[in-house]
Length: 441
Image (cartoon, rainbow, N blue to C red):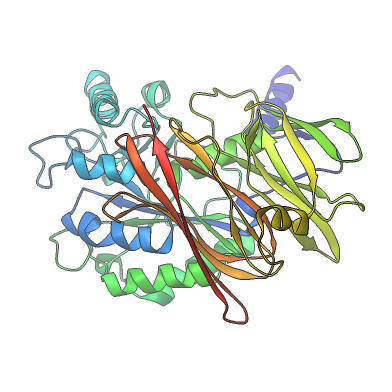
């Protein structure tokens, strides 16, 4: 009987039943209540991953995961300057071990060296965010007790869609792409992603070479671009994010506790917590609640800092949808008037507004505020003094509302940067604005 009870407790824990969310709040299965998650993961450091894929992902405003072999004698030795810049743009730099050797049959000490030394090398060059995921060479899984000392998730290649709450984060499935597996056209990518939509799951692609860069099982760059274009066009359904951030989101979501501290005429205070290590688990989780009847719109802060907020329609009802980092401090939703904010800045009611950032100067994060009064396509990016984009924060269609988007300058040199916003409404009206950012370290 005791054994049976223990099995039930373990099963409950694995399914994430520790989540406690008070009514009327809902937690998004995937960020911004999208239907499925998608991660592009790249192995082996092949040249066109950096020359072609990175700029392409930046163009579409998506993040990718680069599983890096850290041995300097590896055929495609890591270019740490490029990797540091990629990390600053939001891409994940993760482990593919030191030497890309099969872990199967290795002595414990050898396995530990491959896992530990790779992580330490990456974090010596890119200390933040931490290296917390690994792709096993040849998909040979290491000893669990060694793995769990260093990583929160590991990628295998069983070819299946990952459920929204995986039973074993040490064995996260992926789909091998490219000519070697006859998975090299757009329809292959889309059909697997659509199967993730049906199950509300997570589709993880495993890629190596691109075009003629010498990597294994190549995928054409044109094919890659078409798949990204598809996901951009269907961004209401697909959350395209790094392997590590999807893992963080799942674990935070399933351990989340949400309670309402107070409700006033013009303000709602909320507590959002979990039981995880805040150093590692610090990505925003999306929540929503009904918009109070007397509110036209809303803004939000967490621990006094602005958070991204949307007012949306769901089944003929209006909701406040917002991001919150568990254990990141008290969340405050504030009643707002769309026209009121525009009036005080002297803009017409139909014009977008790029508001002032806060804080500015900043180190290493600041929040960029803007407002839309008509449905528009928004591209929000950050550039350096040379006009080169260092980060694309938003590149999607958005409904009218007040938006707060966080920019993290960790990994960038201190100095002057510029936020650039470009919008185009459904009737073709365009708006552009730029504001100065000062990163001070």
